[in-house]
Amino acid sequence: MPSKTEKSVLTVSQLNRQARVTIEQKFQQVWVVGEISNFARPQSGHWYFSLKDQNAQVRCAMFASRNRSVNMQPSNGQLVIARGRVSLYEGRGDFQIIVDQLEAAGEGALRQAFDLLKVKLATEGLFDEQHKRPLPPLPEHIAVITSGTGAALSDVLAVWKRRFPSLRVTLIASAVQGAAAESELIDAIDKADQLSADIILLTRGGGSLEDLWSFNLESVTRALGKCQTPTVSAIGHEIDVTICDFIADLRAPTPSAAAELMVPNRTDLQQVFAHHYRQLNLLWRQQHERQSLKVTNLGLQIPRPEHVLERANQQVDDAGERLHRAALGQIRSKGITVQALSRQLQALGPGEQLERAKQQLKNANQRLNVGLGHQLNTAKKQIAALSRMLQSVSPLPTISRGFAVVRNSQGDVLTGVGDIKKDDTTTTHFSDGIIISKVLKTRPGVTLSDPVEQ
Image (cartoon, rainbow, N blue to C red; front, side, top):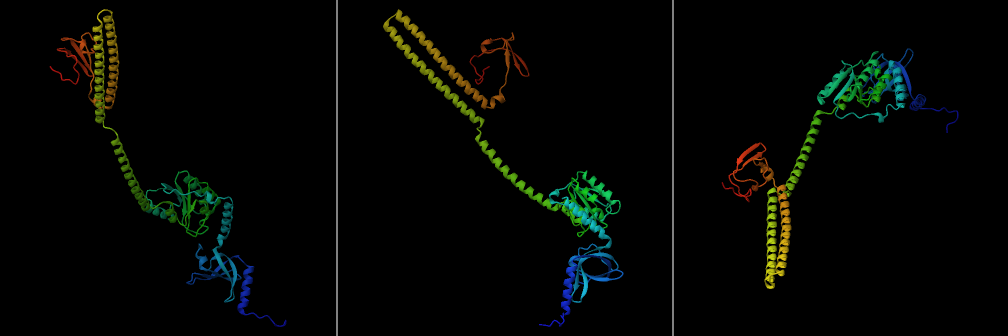
C-alpha cells in the first residue's frame, strides 16, 4: 500500500478519460452560437469545424448520421447555432462539442417559435390521427395552392399528366413566402375549400426555415385545419417539416411524391378494370347459360295448345258417347216397362184398368221425359263447360272468328233460320259496313262445319 505522502499518478489516458466523464456529466446538452472556421468534410461524410467568437473558439464534430438532416450548406465565416453535447476527444485531449443540430443563427428564434406552436396545437388535439381523413381513391378534381411560377407546380402537373391525365386541376395561386404570403394563403385555402374539390394540395419547393415560415404561422395552419375537404401538405424537401404537415390529412416528403400519392396510376387502373371486366363477363356468361337452361326446362313443362285441344276434344267425345249410352239404356228400360204394362192391360181388359194403365203410362212418360231432360241438361252443361274450356285454351277462335248481326226488312234481329223465309231481304252488319241480301234458300240443321250446297 502506498504511504499517505505518496502522490496519485495518472496516465494521460486516465486523465483524459476522467476529464471527459466529468465534462459530459456537467454539460449534457448546450446551444452555442459562433462563426464557422476550419470546416472540413473527409470522405467519411463527417463534418469537423470550429466555432469562434472574438475571444475564443471550440472544436466541433458532426457525424454523417446527423448532418444529413441539416437544411443548409455550412461554410467558413457563416454564423450558426449548434446544439450538442460537450465532450473531450481523449486521443488528443481536445475539448469539443458533438453537434446533433445545426442551423443558421437567424433561425434560432424561429425554431423556438416552431416548437412552441407545435406543442400548443398538439395539446389541442389537432394532430390526432382520429381527425385524419382518408383520401378518395379516384379523385376527379384537385385544387392546388402554390406559387403560379414555382417548380413545385410543374413537378406536380408532370406527374399527374403521366399517371392520371383525366384529372381536373384548379390552381389557386398564392405567395408562398414574404409579407403577403399569410393573407394570400388563408384566402387561397378558403377558396379551395369552397370549390367542392376532392382534395386540396398545399405545396411549394424547398428553402430555409425562414423561407418556409409562412407554413408555420398559426393563422395559416388553423385555416388548413378547418377545411372540410381532405388536405395534403407537401412543403419543401424531405428533410423540411412545417406545422401544416402535422395539420394536413396527409404529409408528403416532396411535391412529386404528393402527386404520386394522390392519384392512381392509369396503367394499374386499366389492368384492374380489365381484370374486373373479364370476371364480370365470365359471370354473365355463366348466369346466362343457367337462365337459358332454366327457361328451356320451363318451356318443356308448358303444354302445347294443340295437345290441350286434342285432349279436350277427346273428353267431349267420351262424354257424348257416355250420354248416348245412358239415353239408350233409359229408353230400353222404359220400353220394357211400357211393354209389361201393355201386357197387363191386355190381360186385365179395358175400363178402369185401361184408364189406370193410361195414367200410369202417362206418368211414366212424364218421368221419363223429366229424367231424360235432366240428364240431357246435365250433359249439355258438361259439354258447354268442356267447350268453354276448349275455347279458353285454344288460340284458333281468337285468331280466326268473325262476328256479324243479321236483321230482316223490319229491322228485327234474326236469331235462327226459322225467323226468315225465302225471298226475304236481310241486312248483315259487319264491323266495317253492311251487306244487303235476298234469301234464296234456307237449310235448317246445317252447322258451320257442314258443306254448303248452292
